[in-house]
Length: 241
Figure 1 (cartoon, helix red, strand yellow):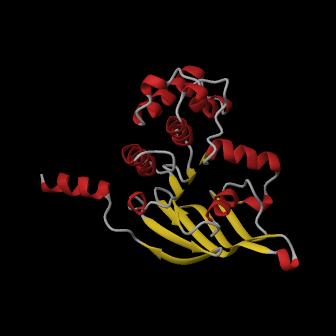
Figure 2 (cartoon, rainbow, N blue to C red):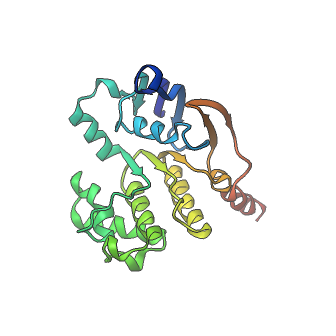
């Protein structure tokens, strides 16, 4: 099933001589269980693609469907409900609540959707431990480094039953080891059936994806299947045994 489908999507800012076409007739389909990496130079439309896919911004033209629902037909409240229940976001500004601990920030979306607090805490601790932050669960955001806050935001995005992950440079504030840990966590979530769209400048991290989409000047210029990534090598070792 297509979790995300974008058809001839455009986004135009300004008018006349000041018009900027951030997206220009973009087509993108992401199936359940698939990870798509989006690459391209600064200003190519990568972040705009994510905000439109997540219903945070309206396209100027075209059609966007998430889990079969056309976003243009949904009310504001219905879009908010869809984001809360089905979409995990990772943006570069983290968006953590300063008055909540790392574990509480991760578990908050689950509790807002009716998950009992004890169950939400167990899930949030498991996600934090998967990113090497089990010992930081009780810390507040201002007690964490930038890289740690980024990992908390990623844990919040993949916890629970989200079916679509939209991540803008999720490894941008991380070193190589932690960047790979993030991609491993996203990959594991996709193996459970989640679809993911990950914007990255790092070709090595993009190798974790099932498909790489290249954007330039708001247009998709190419799509490729990357070389076998780290996880595929682990699978080959298992077959050899």
